[in-house]
Image (cartoon, rainbow, N blue to C red; front, side, top):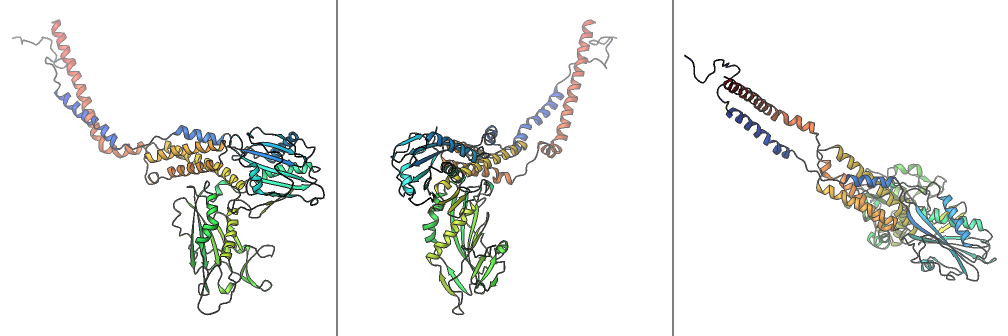
Length: 588
C-alpha cells in the first residue's frame, strides 16, 4: 500500500518533509547576544578618564622657542655735550657698528636686544643736531638741558624719564661731556648709574673720537645688555630660583660653642630695613620669602691653625669644601620651602673661644675683607668674630649683635646674593678701554641689572616650559591608558596661555611682566608634569588588559559563539533539506 504525502523517491538523508524549527536557534542566539550586550558594560568598567591635551599648541610653542630667538626691544640714546664738529649721523653709524661687533655671535641668542640707536650732539653754544633711531618714539632730548657741570643719576632720570621706545622697550642713555681743556686735566671719569643712565666726563674727548665711540658702545653692550658680566657666566639652569618660581632666603646664626658665649640678633629690623627692598625688586623674577633662626653647638668640619704673624686662627680656601658641617648644622628646617622651591642658606658662623679670632686667608696670603665665601646654588657663609675673644667668667655671656655689625653682615650677604645671580660684588667694571664706576642701589640690584635678569630669566623659563610640556605630551601619547585628570589639562592650558602672554610682553618690551608670566608658565608646566595622579598610578597596555580578562570571559564566550555557529549551520542544512523535498514534490 502506498504511503500518502511522501514521494516515492524520498531520501531522508537529503530531504525532510517538515519545516525546521527555530527554537534551538533562538535559544543559542539569545545566549550569544546576552554575552555581547555585556561587552559595553565591561568596556565601561575598564575605561579611564583622559583630559584632552592641546598637543598641537604644545608643538607650536616648542617650534617657536627653537626657531627665531626671543629678542627684547632696547633703545640706546647717546648724547654728546660740548662737541663742535661731530656729525650725529656719522656717530650713530659708528656706534651701531661698534655694537654689532661686540654682539657678534650672541645677537641671535634668546634674551638679546633688538637695538635702536639715537644720537644727539650739543655744541658749546647749546645748539643741537640729532639722528634718531627707528624705534625712538616721540620723546627726544631737549637741547641745553644738560650742562657741563656736575650732574648725578637723578638729574639724568629727570631728563630721560619716560623716554621709552614706541614698542615699549626700555631706553638706556649714555651722556658724554667734553669739558674745556685745563678743567680737571686729561682724566676721564666714567660712571654707570643705578637707573638706566651712564655718563663719561673728561676734557679733550673730541680729539679722542675713536676711543669715545668705543666706550659708548661698550657701555651699551657689556654693561646695559650683559649686566657687566662675562657672556653666559651663569647659565639659566643654575639660576637660584625654584622651578615653582619660589625662593627662600634662610638666615642662620650659628653659635659654635655656647659654653663660651651666646649671641643673638634683631633680625626683624634688618629684614624690614634692608631685605624687604631686595625681595620687592626681584618680585617679577621670584616669589621670595625670608626666614631666620639661631642654632647652638654647631662646630665646623675643617681645622684652623694659629698664625703668629697675624695673631689669629686662619683657614684657607682649600678648607672651604669642608667648612660646612652637614652633620651638626641643621639648616634645612624651613617650613616655607616645599616641593620644588629653592632654599639659599646664609650663615653667620661665630667661632668658639678656642679658635677666636678666625680669619679666611686668600691664596695670595692676604686676609679676606668680608671673611666669607659663597657656595654656588647653596648660599654663603660669613665668619663673625666677637670684639673680645677672652672669656670673662666661667658662665657663658649672652650678647646681641649690634645694629651696625648686623648691617655690615647683611651688606656682605647682599654681595654674595648678587654673586649667586652671576653679578659682580665690586662697584667697578674694568675693560680694555678703561674702568667704570658703578653706583650701588639700595635695593641690591640696579634697574639695568634687573632688566638683564628679567630678559635671561624669561628665556630660561619659556625654554623650560616648552621642554616640560613637550615631555608630558610625548609621555601621554606613548601611554594610551594613562589617566589624565581635568586638573592636569587645565594646568597645561593655563601654562600655554601664560607662555604666549610672556612672548607677547617680551616683544612689546614689558620686561617685568614677561618675567612674571614666564615664571607662571614654567610653574604650571612643572605642576602638570609632576601631578600626584601621574606619579602614583601604574599604566598597562591594551595587551595587558586582554591577558588579564581573557581567562574569565574568553572560554565561556567561545563556547557560546561556537554553539551559535553550529546551530546556525544545522538550521541552514535542515532548511535546505526541506526546500529540496518541496521542489521534488512539485516535480512529482
